[in-house]
Length: 444
Ligand code: ADP
Image 1 (cartoon, protein in one colour):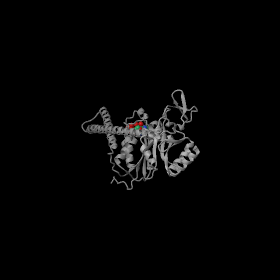
Image 2 (image 1 turned 90 degrees about the horizontal axis):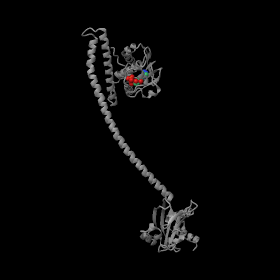
Image 3 (image 1 turned 45 degrees about the vertical axis):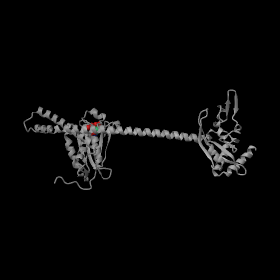
Image 4 (image 1 turned 90 degrees about the vertical axis):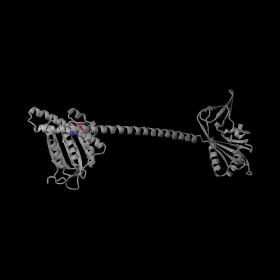
């Protein structure tokens, strides 16, 4: 039987085997052209009687595989011994036993017998992999189907081999990628764990530090209270007259005690804010009166520096909703900074008006001082940060005022921000929400 007749006959018998086989056949026909499929037909004793398509080179089991000289085709040669080279001719399969030629079938003889007996519709071996001597990997899918003669009797087996290397390599790549991903995920989980441990340790150290600062600040404040009390008694000359020199020295001591007290209070505030332990007592308050109190409090500071202060408040402003002590602290810090970072004889302007943002009042403090360099501006609200211009002025400070002021303002629902140019001065703005009730009349 010539091969075209046999192909035709194979097509007929395959059609009889059902849909999946027909698909296989169609696929086989197509792939045959690409030389990616091969088949072998056996008789009932599994002896190969017909082969077709390109026998995949990976089926070659003997000798050494050599590349063809055109470098791109799958045409290979078997070298048997050193001098005898022959092409792997599919006809060498004829008359040989299928399991002998296809090692993957060894052990499946019973299943093959079932296919031959019509008890099993098909036997399928998927993703059989080969690693040819030339390197790389090849994947094959093999299907064994009953092969029927013209009367429809099972006459043998048709063994179809399809080279599915592309898909196989993709699957292998996918598996590899998945494994790499799993490794990365495990590594990430490990790092997250390490990070969590490191974070917990940092938190623990942070807590120790906060406790330390808090205890230290308390301990500093405790002896300062009687110290300041006795200083006041001395300065008020309650227990005797002071000469000018004594008065001058005691004033220096009092100023130092005041600064130490302020520093201790700021340190305590920082730890309280960090721990979320600051509670505001929000009440309607006359913000203009509060600004006036702050101005009066810091009056001696700019008078001593011959600075000129103007206060400008818009008329008929509504009350603000704020914690008076904290609002005073915030505004006081802005006023103190304006004075500290402005040279002697400079100008400071405080204004109070409705904010652009509806529902808020705005206090702005401008000065004609040293300003803040642009590169330092992002850090101004950071704990212990001091701009280089501040350090150059030798003004005292620990870089805590603004880092306390910002969370306090935000806790009120307001905002704090600034504009500054080195050598030209700065303007700090702070907003407080407007109260929906009038401020109580405290003068009554
Ligand atoms: P400090 O105790 O150092 O004044 P603050 O937190 O109040 O701490 O301010 C942080 C830094 O911001 C200051 O050290 C200073 O460098 C800068 N700064 C604040 N206000 C002004 C201002 N009005 N003019 C120039 N620099 C200022």
